[in-house]
Length: 239
Image 1 (cartoon, rainbow, N blue to C red):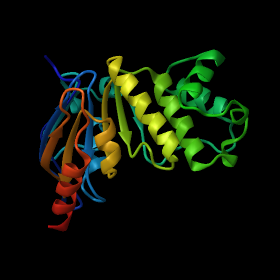
Image 2 (cartoon, one colour; image 1 turned 120 degrees about the vertical axis):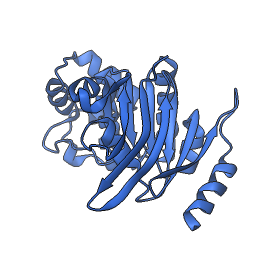
Image 3 (cartoon, one colour; image 1 turned 90 degrees about the vertical axis):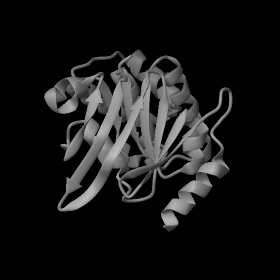
């Protein structure tokens, strides 16, 4: 069966530096796969290759069985991407941001759809008509997550998705991601948060200096052991 996301011996060079070195993995439908690594490990670059913004130096990335380079538009139409730094407009309110960016993606939604998405990310109703320039970073992040949900794509890419969220909001977000995966959405997230990765992911890949150096999978009905992954992460980063 074709995997919605696949990296085959992916290598990436930028400005004479090796960013990714022979990285291979796949993500199945309904699976949450977390790439865990420190700063400069190549996590965000991996996501950008799936979106066609960076061209591999070797190997390939595939979306729904098709090489991204052969049909970038098709790959992007299947993916909702949540970057670490959300690019929303401060002079617009939450509804206006959702409407504007959804229209750019060629989609439309009703006011009820917007409220349903904002309810799912727990953005207070009284805040939704306020300009985003008055939002906290966490509230802006929730608005961006709601936008990703409204895209209703089969694949979701998440770059440090809980950045700026408080502990309660992080737990709510993890529950939401699990619900999405349970409904069949394929999710690839990159993070440096060991606990968060182990709490939500079905599998964790440990990325260090562009190489995939470890893999951990959850046993049936259990979470991935945080202490085991943390020990491997700390050991690899110390090398």
